[in-house]
Image 1 (tube, rainbow, N blue to C red):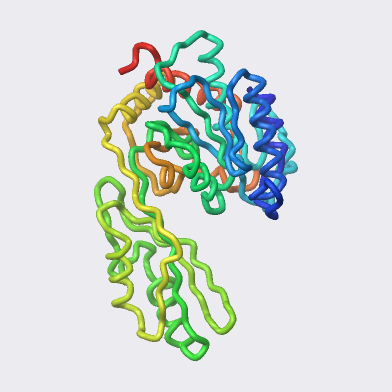
Image 2: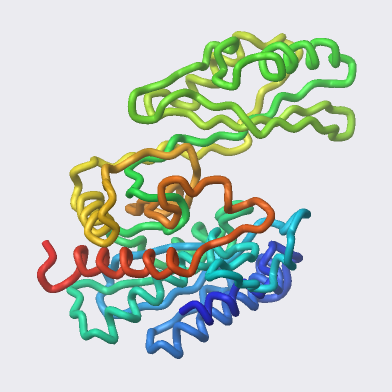
Length: 357
């Protein structure tokens, strides 16, 4: 497993130029092909969906438990001690772009299923490990996948944190636009309500919060010019007790009439009942393998759970492991990769083993 993961992280799979059969560039395509070759070698049925995604499957049934992670990565950036696609390993810690986000974790899911197969575990449902390729830049991979494949009946994405996450905040990106003739109003608005205010949207009147998801968060500020327009982009991470339409209506009450507000995209909040079978079984697996408290949590992050029905974020980062994924010298310990594989294997057995509900 570790050898295969190191081989995968050596492939530069930052999104690139669209080519024939390679919708997100050659690097991502090479990575997907390599992962499917590994899955085939391990004895799984495989399928490549036009370069947008691929999967490895055990079992024949049309209803399946799905685990989806991604092979695309964010740009490496600067500040690396060792080359970002080297697979460098020291003291049982692997450093490479994508080792945590998300190649190591999704490969640990593949090997968890392989371990179950080799041990003769009998499943009452098909199991599918899905390899996405566009999580970082739009999630068009899932859109394509769902055109041709049924969604899983339940499952997870190993692209967040432990314990099991039962709810994700909504996430929206908005744009304020102004003509060059209205720059005074534009900069006054942006300065007052964003640059010189709290990031919970208090001055805008959008400081919504609830007990489960916490406070509104505003971030991702970006100024730019587009022909004769001045633009300010920002992202909202919002709790589940408010709708994006209500948020937009409130922001507009604070805006000068000359400015325009546009919604670029929006992902609705995701929330599962904490005592549903999926959350309960993943909680049990996590607690049995680690001995840690598995009380379900929420997240401010955004994962495939926003676009793939019936799945929740589950792992791979353990409590205290923060700020690793998109930073220089991204790392993951081999012992954590192994621990993830154990948690994921037991989770599959609990969800679909012969004795499962």
